[in-house]
Length: 99
Image (cartoon, rainbow, N blue to C red; front, top):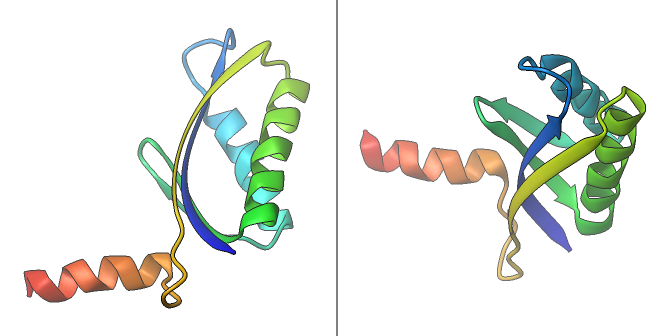
């Protein structure tokens, strides 16, 4: 099943800047070959359910390996089975209505 997931992974106990940890999670997504888009407060990811969820787990593992003693994560996700829809499709639909 395809999923579009919004991931906000926040390492705790590492100081104010978290960009190093965000970058490591993005490396995981690249290695998994997942389509993803960084935004100011998280990352949108699309792909096969099991692959996306495995990537989220690996993000946690790699961020802990960088020294984060604790992580809090917020996930929003959506699936649909009536038709294929990508992140780009969803954005394009709104852009069309704005023009």
